[in-house]
Length: 278
Image 1: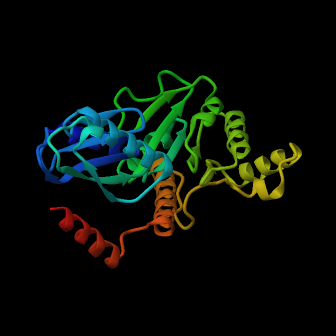
Image 2: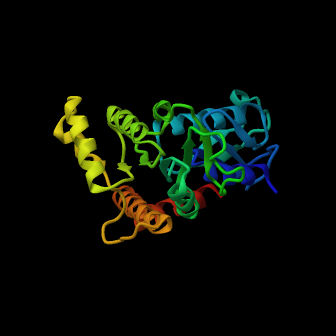
């Protein structure tokens, strides 16, 4: 299997942004032919479009696009002295930017509900991180795509989470739940903050946060009990299904709001651009 294809699968599984650069047209001689690809992440590259200064320029361009953002585009590179080539002609490279698309979900707690929930989340298009303070609680074999983290003080992991993460808090201790809640509120960039528990627990948490001078606007970000309304039940799987349904609702709304597909006109223009380079 091509190295770039393996790397692409890994990037998709790890929710990592990347650029795929492909030779779409060629005039003159080149070390690699049309269809050759190189995959570039922020700190690595996989496969090759021939090496040399052309590849160096392509990698630099790809990383600039990762940094600044950008859409699919085709760039011509003359095969002259500037690229260390003496054969003349040109290479046309198509750069495709694949941004982080999976909503990051962080589950704190590997108790009964956590063990029921995480396998459900692993089947959804989200990136799951599973955190627990106890060595013996996280399963030795995690579902595909799930990252397990042992953290003695789980609230310390919050600083390492991605912007816009969905936080699902269900540890074995109310004090830890509260400390995690405060850490997430202090960041102020969660897409969702949910804590397992009863209505009474939610009310007490709000009172304690108010006593710690959190504003009412900030406190309103807390969802306790968490999960999609209308799905009732106290069994671990019933609670897990309600929470998974809430996560589904979140990423579907997020996708609908931020999705930017090519318009028909954009698609036609890109096709014309490719044909012009053939």
